[in-house]
Image 1 (cartoon, rainbow, N blue to C red):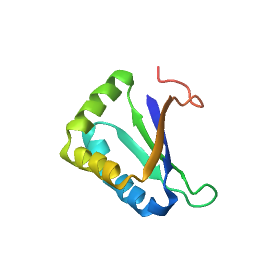
Image 2: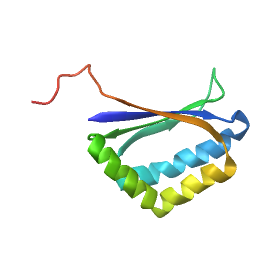
Image 3: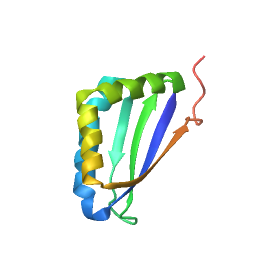
Image 4: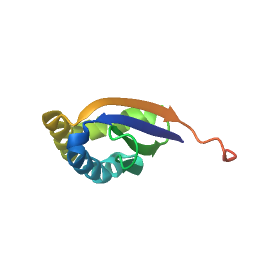
Amino acid sequence: MLTCLIRYRIDPAKRAAFETYARTWSEAIPRCGAALIGYYAPHEGSATRAYGIYDIENLAAYEAYRARLAADPLGQENYAFAHRERFILGEERAFIRRVDRKPAQ
């Protein structure tokens, strides 16, 4: 199991738009095959840093998931919303794996 950690740099004046975007993914992401852990908006400290976190089985499953998400009507609408409103100023993805538990045998 891999965890995809998305770090966003957002426009602090458009935080409400980012929160709308994040809530929309809570429906589309699970439907397309990933286990959404959550989206996190700034609260204290940095006003420009936000995160999206979900689990995916492996990188092959990630590629299939991304294709389904790109074809999903709600996914397409949310991508268009982000592009139109320009609240995301930057985005980085990292794939991490949990190491504090023994792997399944």
